Length: 148
Image (cartoon, rainbow, N blue to C red; front, side, top):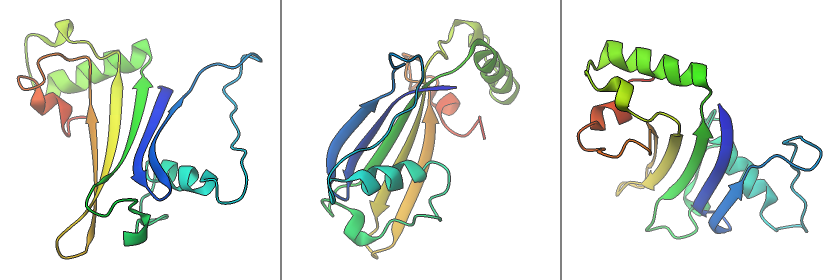
């Protein structure tokens, strides 16, 4: 899958930041983070690390910019033709529907939501959805855990 963008909200010094991933003039996707001390470079890297291993970079109470709002990190992807075919095969097997061929799997979104529970405990929830599937209520079960 090709990463298209990342959006980080309410994390440490970041109120709301979207990073668009585009091919650069040299035909690469190599990006660097440059900024003065305390500009938020480490905050971006720690937020991105939540995707692969939230236990390696645990979120603590001080990481919430506003404590009454959740932290949200959204990764938007464009799957390859093969990956779309694989999605359809897995979903057809686990959630049979006759309309699989009509569904648009050309966009995949991984959302990581981090909440502070009333007890003070931190809860991390990861969810995958296909934003271009218009009738989400009808296909809600496809947007949950079928790709795990």
